[in-house]
Length: 153
Image (cartoon, rainbow, N blue to C red; front, side, top):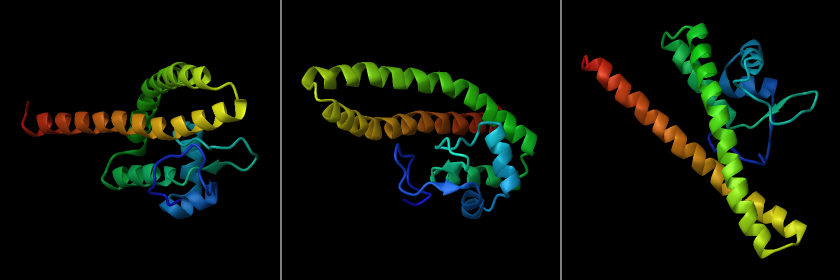
């Protein structure tokens, strides 16, 4: 898996903090600050945190915003507000997927291994699709807001 590929339930090669720093050009101190703010969340609960390599794209995007002149405090505030808003939405989406998909799968088979495989397949497809839907909408809202500001509207 490359850093540009979408998030995965099962990344092939999770990366360490130092590897994330190497992938992004961000300092390990900045990566740790992002972790403290829960803006970069490890995918493992091990002593040594490991990250989905696709998180590197978000870290690089943050660095790009900083290089463009956005102060770190403002970037962190934007990210915290997004996190506050999106956690509830994400939980609702996962609950909905679970309610509607699990019920359908369990109605078709009682084999626990088959249920687990089919749910994993469904989540692997559905979660990135939901991320693209919400991310695309947010991108459109950003563009619309920027256009209004540029035209004085």
